Image 1 (tube, helix red, strand yellow):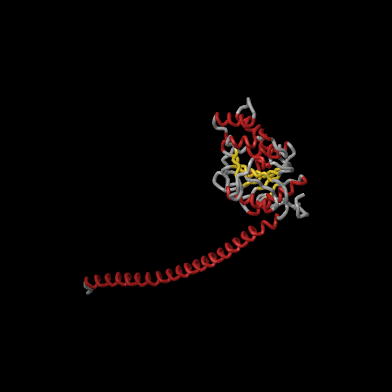
Image 2 (cartoon, rainbow, N blue to C red):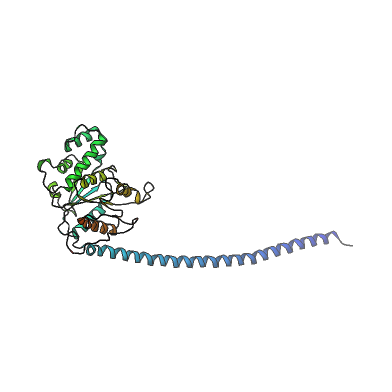
Length: 314
């Protein structure tokens, strides 16, 4: 006769066997899983190390290429603007270091660059006093603020393209006194006088961008004044990507596609790069025979195709 304790012992033995099997099986399966995971982790780590090393190599190559471009820039533009006066105009709010670098490169090309004419935020005319000051500086009376600014922009453009001294009626000097522009030197040099921005066959380079503190119509308004008197002008953009301005083309296209400026000015969309500053310098040289184009990263060409063939300004 089977005793009850036999059943108890049998049941305990079964559960004990299940427990031992579960523990042993878990230990065996767990180790296998861990080993496979470790192999995968090691593989991923090795790939990551290889990619990191590859990235470091590419970054070093990019640094080398950038250094080569920077150091080659003076040779790329050498004597392309010898003796040519370039009136450099920049919007306040963009990167001043890049504007300075452009001025230095223009001088390395042989250009006469007196300094930088900075356009100030007072062009917004956001107060009655500012509008009154602009009317006084330009002699433009009885105009609404919008019409006043447009007329003043074109007046300044004509002045920048002028080849003769305007004496005491120099609108550039008056705009400087009224704080609509600030004239500064280059490379820590002395501040030039307004009269130094005069000379035969002067060409103008306007520099702006989405980060400007100046209304967007000012740069094209000045350009319209320049081309209105058959002056030569190029507009360059210093671009900094942001959530508000993710597209490099937006700011510069608004100027390049202006009905009054289309096919009459050159535009360069990448003065934030050495390549763009080279392009702007060569574009100014190209203006000598009336050739214009749109150059830069998002353009058909990075730099002008018709480079000067004689190593002196034409």
